[in-house]
Every structure is written in C-alpha cells, then in structure tokens.
Picture 1 (spheres, helix red, strand yellow):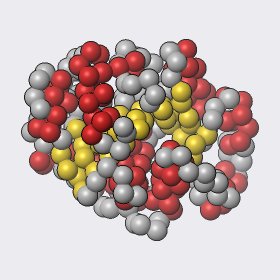
Picture 2 (tube, helix red, strand yellow):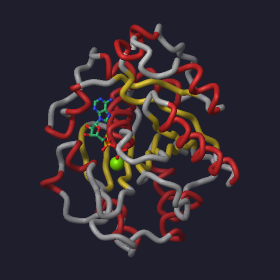
Picture 3 (cartoon, protein in one colour):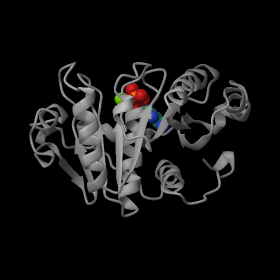
Picture 4 (tube, helix red, strand yellow):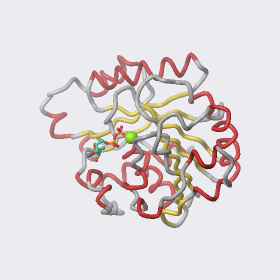
Length: 241
Ligand SMILES: Nc1ncnc2c1ncn2[C@@H]1O[C@H](COP(=O)(O)OP(=O)(O)O)[C@@H](O)[C@H]1O
Ligand SMILES: [Mg+2]
C-alpha cells in the first residue's frame, strides 16, 4: 500500500504546485513509483510544469465518471505519472474521489494530491485517513499563520499535517526582514518537515527546464522526500538550504 500526501495551504500562490511537482520528481528519482494528482479544477498546471501538456486528452473527471484509471494517467518520466485536473469546476465528487484514492493507493508507492488553496475542506475527507497533509507557507508570519489555521481545521477532522516552508532566502532572513523563522513556526505550533529555497530553477520548472540533480532545490526536495518516507534526516544549517 502506498503513502498518500495531500498538499494544501491557506493562501494561494505559495508554491503548492511547485512543491508537489518537485517532491514527485525527487521521490521518483529515489526509485519510488509516484502518482501526482492535480486537484486544481479549472486551473490545472502540473501538466505544463512537468512538460506533458501537449499530450493531455483525458483528466481526473473522466476517471471519476467511469473511465479506466490508466486512461487518464500520463507518464512524465521513469516512475512518475500524472493525472491532470479537470478544466471545468464542479467535476470532482467526494464519493468517486474516495474510491479513486483507495484504488491508486494500491497501485503506487506514493500518491500526491495537489489541492487548491483555501479552507474548502469538502474533498479532504475523501482522501484516505492515513494520508499526511503538507501545508505550504512562505517564511513569513502571515502565510505561516494561515497554514496553522488550515492545520488546525485538518486536525479537527482527524487529519495529520506538517509544514513546508517554501521560497526561503538565507540572505533575506539574515537581514531580519521577517521574524526569525523558528519563532514564527513555534508560535504557529506547526511541525516543520522541510524548507525549500527560493530558486530560479523552481521558477523555470514550467518552462521545461529540469531541476539540476545537485542543485539546492533538488537537494532540499530529496531531504523532505526521505523524511516523508520515514528516514531520519536532519535539517541542514540554515545557510546551506
Ligand atoms: N521555491 C521557489 N522559488 C522560486 N519561485 C517559486 C518557488 N516556489 C514557487 N515559485 C513560483 O511561484 C509561483 C506560484 O507557485 P505555484 O506552485 O503555482 O503556487 P500555488 O500552487 O500554491 O498556487 C510560480 O510562478 C512559481 O514558479
Ligand atoms: Mg497550484
């Protein structure tokens, strides 16, 4: 049975899809068979980020309406597969999604659901109970507080979550433009699972530029991936992120 991760955030634009794509690339490079599911109805983007947009014909809504799962699963690279989001709103119903999630859990080592931002939780409970939610925020008090609100609401529904800080910039953190990142996270009472650096490599992902194997973003994503899969990996020194 595979592990399920669901990517969420309070605010939009904090990098959920970038982190989802990055983690799926990292996990597949570690040898796990990964299925990435784009849940952003009407605003799909992972097909573009992962360079397969010109192949997409069917999407998640076709599976939920009865097509074979394999009909809307697109191969991105060795070990990495994507189900694109529907192009129209209102095409994902909770019951069919729950069936789909249970089926793919048995077929892949890892399934990552990239949810849209916000606190519309109607579909979260369709994801199997043992899923781990990953809430993405910037290294600032506002988005971390929003992440804490989302995590609190998830906890009320019995869902466990961890925090991923995205777009971390050591130079800016040194200038004390924002409060110390540890303080922000402590105040929000969130469990941090990793930090992804601010990086032009991640920004250029959607232009079809692959991540460098030994670049900082990929190294950060590999560390998070290993932790997600149960390995004990220490956070690096903050100036090495
Ligand atoms: N770590 C990062 N470094 C640089 N740019 C990033 C990073 N993460 C996200 N971005 C950029 O931020 C924008 C929003 O990211 P996206 O993943 O679409 O956010 P969301 O899915 O939360 O709406 C995109 O232009 C993306 O390239
Ligand atoms: Mg997104």
